[in-house]
Each structure stands twice: as C-alpha cells, then as structure tokens.
Length: 162
Image (cartoon, rainbow, N blue to C red; front, top):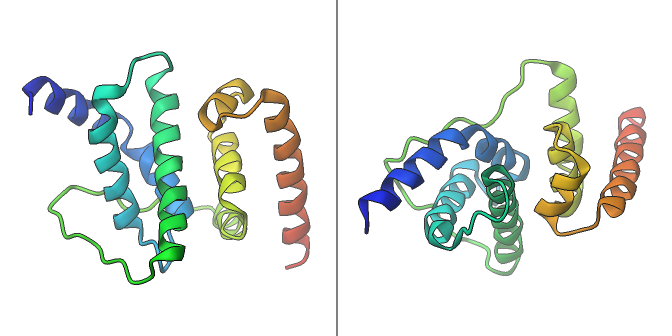
C-alpha cells in the first residue's frame, strides 16, 4: 500500500464526503443502513482509485461510484437478506438532514422512486448539468431530460395525493 494512494484516497474522501453522504442518505433504508452504504462506497473508492484514469472529472467519477455502489447494494440485499454491518472506527458523516420541512418531504417522496430515478433526481437537485448527469449514469442527454420530466411530474402527483 503506497503512501501516495493513502494521501489521494484521504483527499478525495475528505473533499467528497458530503456528496457521498447525500447519495447514501437517498438510498438508505432499514435493509441498507446509511453507515453500511457509506462504508461500502469508501471501500469501492479505495479499490477503484488505482483504475481512475482521469478521463472524467473526479466529481463525476465519485457520483457514479457512489450511485452504482448503492444501487448494487440494494440488488445484492434483495437476494441475500440478513447482511450484517462491519464495525469500523471511520469518521462517517451523519446522513443529510436539511432543516426545511419541504425538502424533507421531497426526500420522503424520492424514497418511493426506483433506484435509477433516485439517482437522476438527486443529481438534478445537486444542480448537475444534463451532460454530466448523462456521463455519470451512462445514458444520453436527451434521455436525462425525458426521464427528469417524468420523474418531476410523478413527484408532483405524489405530493398532491398527500
């Protein structure tokens, strides 16, 4: 294990801990605790650090890694109930907790979306441009626009049914 890799990992983990926490908080549930998701993202960050070629922005890579990790966790967890959390001494930030009641309600509605829909709306709420969302999710920019329109319409309908 090289000192350079440790330093790069620590720098990226520090710079993007809020982004990672936000993604993990959107996908956290009773079967996928926030701390477990966060830890899994950190593990995948460590493993993938050597293969990051710098062809995309670091933020794009981090979002993609965090989203894919959380989505894959749910796929695995559906097949293998009863996974246990690993205990660590890592400094894991608390889940994102916005003070606004409206924001909290929006995130409660987002919990009911499919994983890819959660990813799209989370990136959009983080004010990522459509081309970056497309790069992160591996879909076309036009597909991003179409899916976001449908998701926003669906969220609006869900909110009006409350």
